[in-house]
Each structure stands twice: as C-alpha cells, then as structure tokens.
Image 1: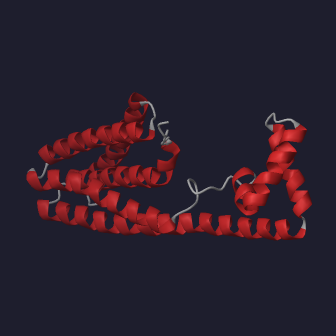
Image 2 (image 1 turned 30 degrees about the horizontal axis):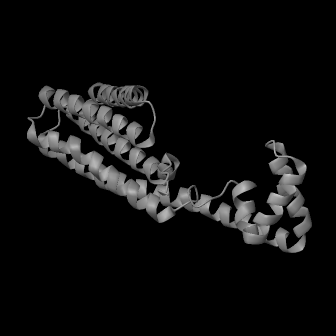
Image 3 (image 1 turned 180 degrees about the vertical axis):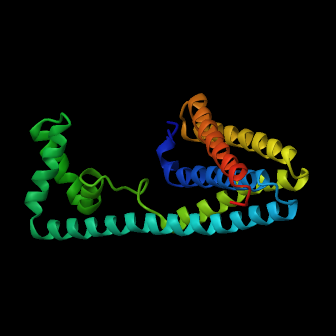
Length: 231
C-alpha cells in the first residue's frame, strides 16, 4: 500500500505572513520615501541616501517589531499551557469531562466523545487540551526568532528593488515614474506569489496589494511635492 502524505497550506502561515508583510512593507515604504524625496526636487545622492537609510531602519524596525509581537504571543501561549498543566494535575476528571463536551459539541455521541477524550488524554493530556481547548499546535505556535529574521530579510529584499531602479535612473520626473511603475509591478508580483503560496485567489490578492501600494506612494509623493522638502 502506498503511503499518502498530505501537505496542508496552513503549515506555511507563520513564515508566509512575515515574508509577505516584510517584502510588501519594504517595497511600499522605500518606494514611497524615494518618490517623496524625489518629488521635493532633491539631488540623486540625497534620494539614494534616504532610500538606504529607510532600508536599514525599516529592516531593523520590522525585525524588532515582529520579535516583540510574536514573543508576546509566545508568552501568552506558555502561560496558558502552564495553567492548563496545573489544571490537569489538580482536576484530571474535570478536564476529561471538559474535553468530552468539546467533542460532543462537534457532533460526536456522548459515549464516543467520552472514550476518545479518555484515550487521547492517556496518550498526551497536555498536548490534546492545548490543541482542542486552546487552539495551540506545532503548526500555529509562535516562533519569534523565525518571524523576526524572515521579516528583516524580506523587507531588505523588497526595499532593494526600488533602490536599484533609483540607482539606474536620473533624478526628477523620470525617477518618480520609473520607481512608481516598477514598484507597483513588484507589488503585483508579490501579491500573486503570496496568494499562490497560500492557496488564495491570485487576482484578489494582487489587486489588494497593488491598490494600497499605489495609494501609499501617491500620498507620500503629494506630501513631498507640497512641502518641497525631503520627507
């Protein structure tokens, strides 16, 4: 008999979220910064300096933000697990009844739910309650370091794209058009890749990323043009 191995897309949710967020933020924030500075009629050296500074600061900010945020989630998960472990030690029968009720609410008969709960708790009581009662599993559990590194790396990759276009084009209207057009193309590709990786509708995700990226760059360019100074 051939073994059947299933690969569920939800297993990618942790790193995929951080990757898409990082790359998207890298493209949008750096391109918006470049367009805003270029719209203020700055020289190319100033535009490049602003872009590089935005890349470095953004990558560090993304890494720190993701680490702090996901660490908070991890701390909450650990606190819940510690509380659940104590409850299992103090009131194992009550926890068994609680698990049985969860299965009954999903349509399992009382006798079967009671037996399933008893067998699963005999094998791994804490893991079973973490999964069924708290919604914590190895797939969705928080990974702060992975999220931080993924966000920093993908932000840097995303920010490098408009920076490269900036380096290759003359300052002024040409740079604004080139950076804007290329960045919107990069965003559309990112939306399509992220959607395909996560098994989501490609068209909807591509349009969503494209629209909000265009809006962010338009607002920043308008501010840069209005005040006439680097933003």
